[in-house]
Length: 308
Ligand code: ING
Image 1 (cartoon, rainbow, N blue to C red):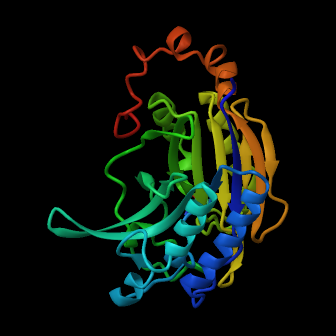
Image 2 (image 1 turned 45 degrees about the vertical axis):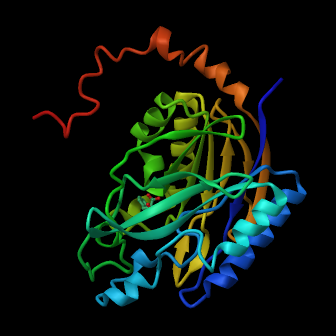
């Protein structure tokens, strides 16, 4: 009996800074309904799905920063989404800015959660690879202050039993690092859910701007293929507060093939039947870790830097 998860990537268009969470959640519910109408059992939403991508702004007043964070989850704003998904029996994941008291101090993470079909949060991931910078850099047309507003996730990567398989999460910049996928594969993940907010313009290297869509799919496809996993990449897309965010949401098979891809830069649902048993096509052959992988010689993979 094959283990097929009918999976939807629910790409979202821009969230203006002043768009109330209730309005965003209503859009997410509409996407959830659209996905469920196509038989989706799992719906994947983008990184920081509830608000505008606020790390693009230097916000000196901490109150302005805190306005983008959720102090509890679910909460009043997201309860309707949890309720609708539970009524439909659909699992879903989305990203949000999380603030909590931990070990006697305030911690802020770029977080993503997986909620099962009964409304239980079954996975809670905090973004490991924070790109960008921590101080205001006025030379940039827009900032990328994730290192200022978030702490790196301290718990690394994991996968959980859900929907008949093992599912892991990663967030945005994580998808560019091969270590992300290998860590998740070695944890047993058969599917990885990755929301992203990716500006087309990359101020430190504008000569790469035209490569953003290519690098997006290259990262997702390489990670899927080299680890025999389904990879679901989901964009917050479009021109958000003057910043051009790429779309290109995609469902990638363990072979590295894109089996479904978004065609717009707005709210858009794409759906595919993801047979988890297809992971074996790769993992029992070309990337059979037990037979072919050589951890005995990979002595540098966790080293802090390049040897001098
Ligand atoms: N965004 C971007 C990403 O890794 C970025 C940052 C953009 C890095 C363009 C390199 C090039 O997709 C987030 N949120 O990580």
